[in-house]
Amino acid sequence: MRLNGKVAIVTGASQGIGQVIAQVVAREGAVTILAARSGNNLKATSEMIADAGGESHVTPVDITDEVSVKNLMDETVSRFGTLDILINNAGVAGPMKAVEEISAEEWEECFAVNVTGMFLCCKHAIPVMKEKRSGRIVNISSLSGKRPLVHRSPYTASKMAVIGLTRTLAFEVGEFGVTVNTVCPGATEGERIRLVIENESKALGISLEEAERNFTGAAALKTFVTPEDTANMCVFLCSEEGRHMTGQDINVTAGLCWY
Image (tube, rainbow, N blue to C red; front, side, top):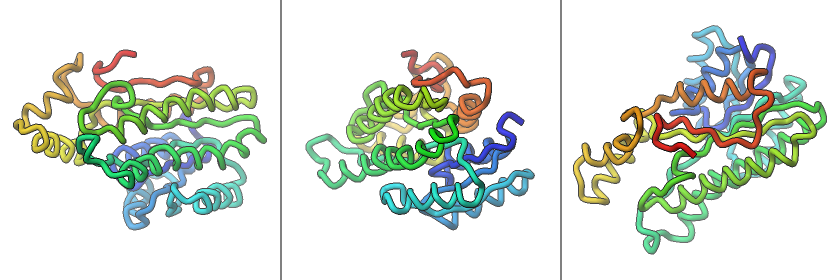
């Protein structure tokens, strides 16, 4: 197991990609702290991990609240003595509207979760990692942080900000043996992408099939990716195999993006 003995925090672990990342990280041997706002859904993730023989602990947290984030880090270190891995997966889709229809509150809410929340988690995890002179941080961005997504300006802007944060942090903490990377998933199979396709179909006045092709048609493999694809990349970056990779934004997009 590539993460045996490690202590890992996964945010947004209550559903979707985050739930699968948490399961795979635990399967690879890490004690996995499950962080999200929804305690009930976190319990479901924890049960899945236990059924597979892994160890996890549920810690509800609001990543937009600095006190809540600090408590998450402090409780983790107090209970387990360290923090080796932070996977910042929590995020929101934001509104799907033309930019002139988006309120300032909608814009700020999207950035509060997708960028500020990630910043707060890094801010309070990095001192622990710097002191022990080792650590792995993986920030989940998106294909949309690299290419346009019509009527999703808050989301695309926030996901591009994640890449900038990652690159800068990599150089701030590299001398302390801490790596910071971004994974950019493409359109990922699951309930969330189906909702996005439905919304795009309505917003653009096109069929569901046409809306789906907007996500898969230009991909080299002509497919969606799976949550497991992203989870496996996270494990690689957090393992000894990925020790010399930092400051990277890595695409898992079925060939939909190549830069």
